[in-house]
Image 1 (cartoon, one colour):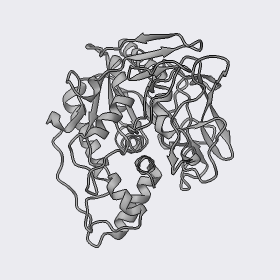
Image 2 (spheres, rainbow, N blue to C red):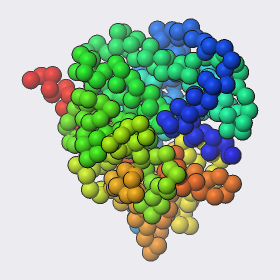
Image 3 (cartoon, rainbow, N blue to C red):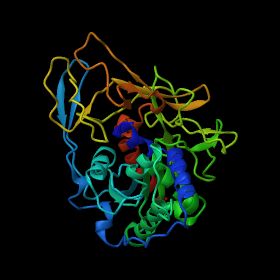
Length: 400
């Protein structure tokens, strides 16, 4: 199995739960509870407002129109951002233990560059480090190896995020609105946090919105609630206290029967996976405002830079935006509910007719994973717009 395939396998809530179950079954002694992290120490945070860290990187973007014309779009952190963003990253750690340590390596820095740092123009960004189940441990499980006995509790990472959230609330929030953002495993952790610590509790009043991307959030079929009892799915750009969730597949490569994405877990009876299109909250098809990595993907593969303009020079900015090339629509098909992404290719124009983002194993596309690698990138511009509009609506509601 390729490193890329292993990297995204732990990023799914279902796969992580399966790994944790096998881990517990292999352990010969009770799982240990590690000492709590000190989230008062800023070294325990991957991103912190005003600090020169991974979220202060370069988000300069080359915007390429259908006719090949290119302009450069600049970006800057908003020093007085009106609301906060609290982000939990997917499983990316290559640390050697069963759970990761609390040191930010290249893989943790790379993922926030792709999924979070751009939002610093709309919100103050907070991203705690947490001790997640590692790729190294998963690799042992996948290949049939044994894990160390008596390892840390499988919910160590979740408990870390709860501690980080409570520290943020007690010392940083100061009555501000907050957007919760996570991808894949990070979205799964936040789903637990919201269900256990926020839904129906006084702190829910601070919730601007929850962006739970690349995860199967169970909701009643055709409904707006399910896992969360008082936090519905978002239907408007000025709605607050709501949730957005989706997984993405190419429209011409829908999820096959063996896909874990786009379907509620078996125990969630009479429910389906939520799908809310950030570009069309009320439903229907709309252009996606994507910010794609100009080379490689969010896991830092060694792919060659794409020829974004046929016969043109390589793009030199970190990101590319391609207006009108991508559109998305939430669809229900064969028991799945997902964001179907169409590449509006035009062979007659000079702009690229394709995008990278598939999971490839031994030269073969793993269709059951869809466009999981770029779930966030596909709609990053739309997400940033929602952080801004929903944040403004939350602030306006405080003045009433």
